[in-house]
Amino acid sequence: MKTSFTPSNKGCKTPRTENLFGPTRFWVYLSIFCSTRVKKATLIKIKTIIKIFLKSHRIKMKRWFFSTNHKDIGTLYILTGIWRGILGARFSFLVRLELSGPGSYLGRDQIYNVVVTAHAILIIFFMVIPIAIGGFGNWFLPLILSCPDISFPRLNNFRFWLLPPAVVCLLISSIVERGAGTGWTAYPPLSRAMGHSGNCVDFVIFRLHLAGASSILGGVNFLVTFLNLRRREITFEKISLFVWAIIITVILLVLSLPVLAGGITILLLDRNINTSFFDPNGGGDPILFQHLFWFFGHPEVYALILPSFGIIRHTIIYLRGKKEVFGSLGIVYAIISIGLLGCVVWAHHMFTVGLDLDTRAYFTSATIVIAVPTGIKVFSWFASLYGSVIFWSSTILWVFGFLFLFVVGGVTGIVLRNRRLDISFHDTYYVVAHFHYVLRIGAVFGILCGATLWLPLLTGTILRFWYSAVIFLIMFVGVNLTFFPLHFLGLQGIPRRYRDYPDVFAFWNIIASFGSLLRLIALFLLICGFVEAFIAGRSGTQRSALRRSPEWRLGVPARHHTYTQRAVCFI
Image (cartoon, rainbow, N blue to C red; front, side, top):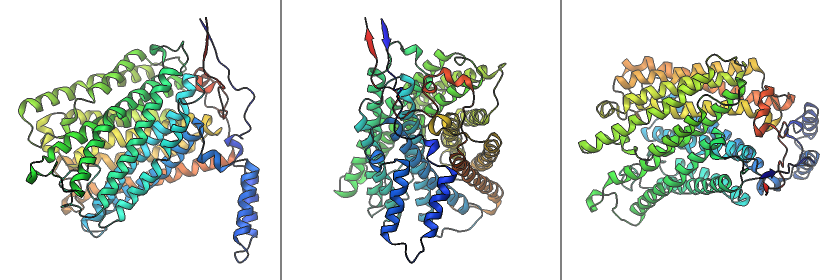
């Protein structure tokens, strides 16, 4: 049996991104804009300038609003995810600004809780998931599987446009009434009418429904693409680890999101039509919501980090010059095991709610088992790097940073799996430090690793090595100064979601706030570096070994259309 494929060798009329921003054209547009005086800058002249810009670059708004091309939709996910990540980072800086010293800065406790809630939801649902799955998944899943596009392109476009209304609902929930200060978990009774009597929590629920529908549609789309459109000679054991990570992630989302949808729908009924599913006075049980939420929440936290595992695999094999990482098949089984075990350990978030002894013993044991496949992955990565000639670039720095952060977060996770210690550390800053090391910062470092690795493929440009190294150094120092002191605060019993504290704890909070400032500076420098690379048009790939992977064989940057038809099998 032979399989033939028809790549689009004729090119595409759509220009490459590296030609969109040239220094000459940039100054031409700037001079045209500046030459138009403010008094004469009528709507007609502004419209004329916009038409010239769009015509010269041949960019149609229809391409971006109604596109069915997986690369365009992936680019939209990445760009909008970056914007939402910047917004979430600003909320994070406000949190650290409030905690930089004893006393009040924001004024009220409710404002502080609203900022914390908005930060968590923006980073989890609107930054990490859209960029890792919607951005990189849309871009590279069809390229690696050698298929023309995602199975249902219009559905792919529709799921993207579900996110902007969800973001609007989130922002509205922060300014309506007193704002939604429930945290990203939205536990009742705080989220019921007695805790938030306005419509702010209702907007949060609508946001979760929209984002959940988007994730479910995307998950089904990716699964159908994986099963039906990949090259027939790519058997399961030959599939890239990045594809495996994306597929296991979307399976977790498809299985767990309907449970969350049911829980928040019941909460919506409790708030608006006076049902009592979560009200003890009416025979309900508020602990039921925690079970429903964490049955979704724990697979969700693995969905945040699993795509980064695949990105790290790609980076390691490219920069060490070999075909595969050490124990690649074992890593595949480890990822599958993590996905399965992640669905049956949700109650280790609930050790303080009064679970019986046998239940706590089961969830403690099941949680420690997850450390086995996780350790397999980590040791396989280190074994792949050990003894090899490493091509030093900015990408490998993000790999080492990710490994360090993930290992530190994993060690603190082993501590928290013990039910006795977890009861002591529950809702303290020790837990905050743990999930930031593993999920937030670990996942973000994985995304930045993928961005620096695939930037030539996405845009045809490349960052300067020394500039990227400086950004990595500032970011790495900043995140560790921000979150490592939280372990000490947690060990001293400081609870989370409190905006004030005794003066004796000011030292570690000042250090953490200074680290948050460094993170903000690194983020600003990173954006400036991307803009400078686009304007300068610095082209080139990082290494010829990149050509071994399918996504690099179709040109740099990738053409707008890569394959004109799916695989055709001849017998």
